[in-house]
Length: 322
Image (tube, rainbow, N blue to C red; front, side, top):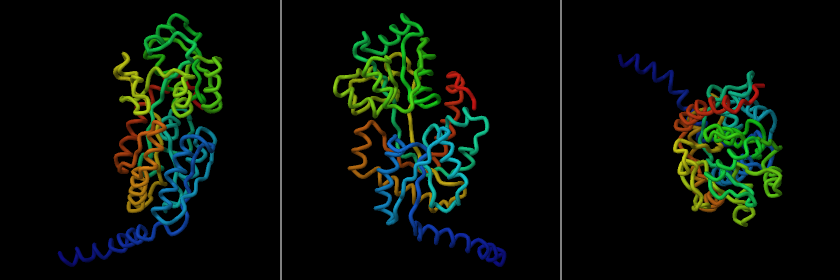
């Protein structure tokens, strides 16, 4: 009996020691964080802000590498095919994990099988803002105005299939209204047209906040299940007559499947420490973000729930499958 136990321990001990050694030494060289979108967007900003703190904490550079294209699929595929050693990571937004699988018929990665979730970096709701020249001060006003002008209310979005686009279409379906979706190449051009009155409304967050604060745009609802500290007087959509409505954007950090648990845990702890830093936390909450940092297993459970949530949303939006 004891001889058998001894043999088993002898067989597994080298593997356990190897994992422990890998974790102790990690990182021993710079780590690359792939952002699957262009520089300047939310995923890129989060990667640079949190990555710098991780560099300070772990003693190696965390270098952001932007690899945009195909709705984030190019960067995601690159990470999925990288060695599972913790030196190539991916900032994985909601689109990469929960939306692309329902849009791309031949997606070159599997969001659950090909990645080890590390943690959520941050969540952020969308704000529904309108041009203040319109006779709209509440969400009820917006719905009434859209019903009075079916097919004429123009809503900007940063691209077909984005979280903002799907949120807008999903809300229109829930409210029983017909809106015109106007896609742009990014959020900023849509916000500029909203300011000019070329479009009537927009679901977004960071690009809208300074204009809301300046009184150039009017915020009428928030898509989260709670009010934003930065917009305490703006009710949620759930408060405004749609009690089950909740949509949020989010960004996560993942590693290639098979990355040792000890390394995943070390990365998760570094992110948790980074988002707890007062300067980082202040920047995140000031822009409407809810800092993440939770455990890897909870992140995997969250991924599964988001995949299930977005399947009917994508179908309702009639997004063409590529």
